[in-house]
Image (cartoon, rainbow, N blue to C red):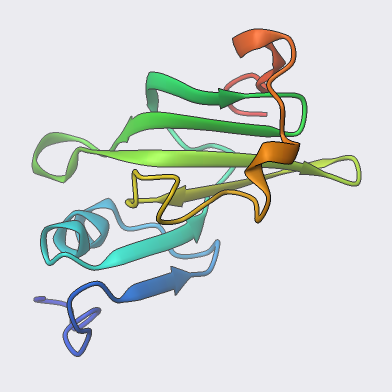
Amino acid sequence: MSNGIGRNCSLRSLLLFDLGYTNFSVFAQLSAAPVTWVTRAKKNLAYTVERVLVPSATVCERLVAIGQGEDRQTVRLIELYFQGTWYRYLTNELNPMRLPAVLKPWLCIAKGGASACPAKGT
């Protein structure tokens, strides 16, 4: 990696980023490595929904496209409702079985279809 992030990571490493770090170019480089990453999503994140995976009142998972040009990639947007607040995370791990949004996903029964997901940007 040209910027040093992920340089010493072994294949299949998992990197966690703080909310203040959003660099689509680095995320694309890590995904190509392949290094798995997770970061908190900013409220003003620009994305395009490609597919809704889990729509429920407390968990919403979508495949979304982020970035532009060479940095554009499909990632998973995970939104969790906890104690009155929605928390949003991005990861390049697209398989929910490898990186589940919740420890017991069978407790999150989809009720109400895709309309149960929070609106984009909320």
